[in-house]
Amino acid sequence: MTDDKKEQTPATTVTPQSLVTEEHVRAALKADKGSDAHLTSWSVADFTKPGDNYACVVTSVNVKFLLHNQCAEVVYIVKLNPCRTFESFNKFFGILFEKECNFYLNLLPELNAALNEVGLKRLRLPRCFHGSLESRREVLFLEDLRPYGFRMFDRRRGLDVPHATLILQELARLHAASRLLMDKAPGQDLTDKYKFLLKDWTTIGNTGYDNTMIFIETQMKSSIDMLKKIGGYERVVSWIEDLLPRVQEEFDKHLCGSKYNVVCHGDCWNNNVLFRYNDDGEPVEVMLLDLQLSRRSSPANDLNYLLYTSLTGEVRRPNLDAFLNTYHAAFTAVMEAAGKDTIFTHDQLKQEFRDKNVIGAIFAMMVVPLIIVEPENALDLSQGTDDDMDALFNEMREKALNELDSNPIFRPRFVALFDEFIDARLIP
Image 1 (cartoon, rainbow, N blue to C red):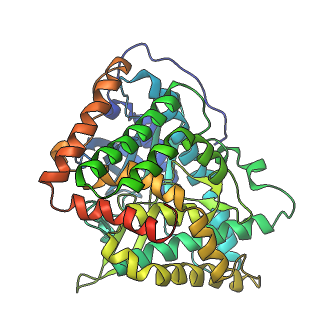
Image 2 (cartoon, rainbow, N blue to C red):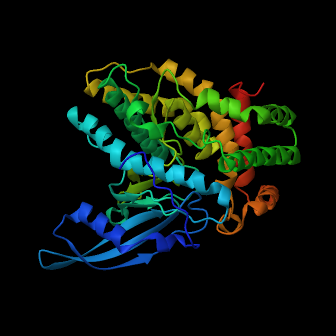
Image 3 (tube, rainbow, N blue to C red):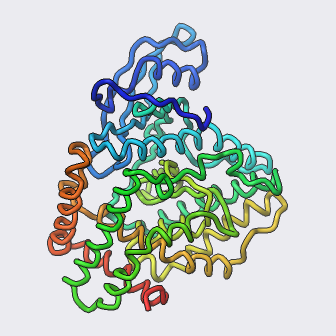
């Protein structure tokens, strides 16, 4: 797998599930089970529901095969280009797949090797067996974690302390592993080898990016509408109105490199992780998923994204210092296993986290309404064209206002964000 992509314009409209071909299935089976495995049959079986995924379609492929004269079966989770009729998003989706394919097939093995060299376990991510970056027909075959007991956390519930702790510990291991990899080539930027880390939806500069920015601005304007309806948040409304014209400036400032550079997940919220539970229903292991927005950046961006999109205020506020402590301890443990000093003290990490709070605020305004929305009101990008974009975004604003009154978990989750940003002095 390389950073190069073959461009192709499809002659006809296709469905995401039709992108799975026998050639793809055979390639995944060979990578997983070896060249002695002989494919006998396969079928696609959908299992996700509205609101679970926005940037791709996720399905499963059930595979039957012969190995050493024994019949066997395996299931793969397959991510597919969503084949949207919104033409402007095609390049956007292509970049997401390019980043994730290259992360799993090229970067992740080196991250795991760096951990193994110092006696640590590999990162908790699913194994990847096959990826194809044929333009507009992208597919990615991944390990099915369901047989091991992993399942998705309800996106509408805020993570509690045990769930959040597991994610923070694994994020820290991902970040620290990337620092170990950087140390192998001192003076050389990791992006020299992994150029996909520099490609980002914030920098692609086409109409897909423009519509993404319009979407973010729509969510921010929707936040203004809701705060005005709630009342008493005039200073927050003024702050958002001042922030709106300089969102790109903030992205350029905070997302594109840092003195604490690591490989960031980029999209770590509670739908992009899976948990395994013990017999008492307690989470005991986490798996990180969906590396489509992986980038080289400050670890504080991942921390802000996770903590302000996926937790309620009543969990986040009293435990914030403890969460940062948990992350710092896990990061430090990896560095110490390699005989290296950590790259920041706890106080420096806390300051970096606060310095990136504006990123937490922007993404919270963008993501939280999508997380909390009732399933029947989830954003639907399956149909429509670029000409429908304005109407779609206006519909989203109306739904958010309606959810404010009709959805009992919406208002407290929403206002807690701004109460905390006021306390943190992000909002003057």
